[in-house]
Image 1: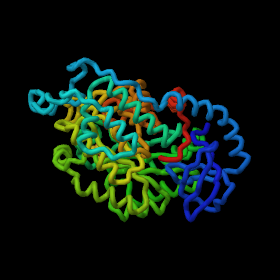
Image 2: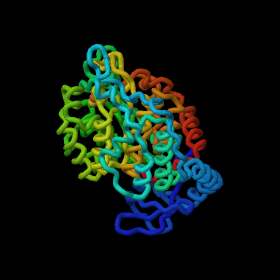
Image 3: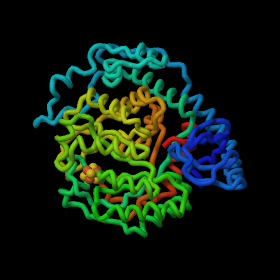
Length: 463
Ligand code: SF4
């Protein structure tokens, strides 16, 4: 089964190839040898990861063609440009804050939170300004994040989805992820595998096991992009990671994305040379004071330096923040989006905080689905062409319907967890994280059927 559609190389200019996908043109970086015009390739995250023989490519394309155009039409209809007329609810209705109150002992909302949503916001002119290609001010963006009128929110999500469609057409990304160690030396206040949590069983996959799992997932299930994720586990030295990456890259054509925490830039440089091409590391919050309130072992400045450093090395960047941190305001959320955008992020990864009982944030409140959708939609308005991940935490908190709504609010990227079942339930960064791990074919079928129901095709140019 394939999750990517082969693209035909139309032209090559320096290291950039122009690819054709049933008439759609996309650019990708040439990262494998001997590519020339007329070749068929798989590209992921804007990087060519594999060359195919013409017969194999034609056979995959023949299997896709009819479905592709049907999906494209469905997506076009679902994301039609005409915005619905505004018909605001009577004043006062649907005006509760979508954000949890800060933890203030008794859990009462502060006056600032109580005031949110008042004022009868009318977002239509703001959306029209965005659609006209004008840059929105911070105040206008904040109005969108503070909006809680259902009619207006529907318009915001629809606008974001139409931008997604205009830029990406019906392309969507489905990446595999494997969590190879839940050891971590850090103590992030929101994370269930923090070093201080003595209530979990720790595991570490062996080098051979990791390589075999990834290679077999690529060969058996057709994944073309893979995230290698772990806690910050010093057992996995640069040498071990180089071995894992090079063995995988020698065996299969796949985009490897590292989610292994803070390492020095020299380590990341060696891992790039070994064949890794993406780094997934969230900054968690762009507020230095919030950051220091949830971290004891990590420094805000170091995280920012790392993100900029890996970008300079040449990595694709996937980053974002946690939404729902105690005391976090809509302004903080907006700053998170703007900061991620300023990093030239290729994939935005914003996740809702799901309070874990074995962490200092056990008593926090989870955010509403609308808070999450607003974040995705406003990110789409700001970034336009970035890829926006609908995280597994969104699915955990809001179910498949939440994922569907996130995909219809500007999201275009998903991940399927391929961690072996015996480990998956132990990678409990939030409660219930590994539930249902093991049934890989079932998860793939569910994901594809959801994407197809929305007219999306996992083309995978663009991470
Ligand atoms: S969030 Fe990452 S770095 Fe922090 S404790 Fe969890 S695994 Fe470790």
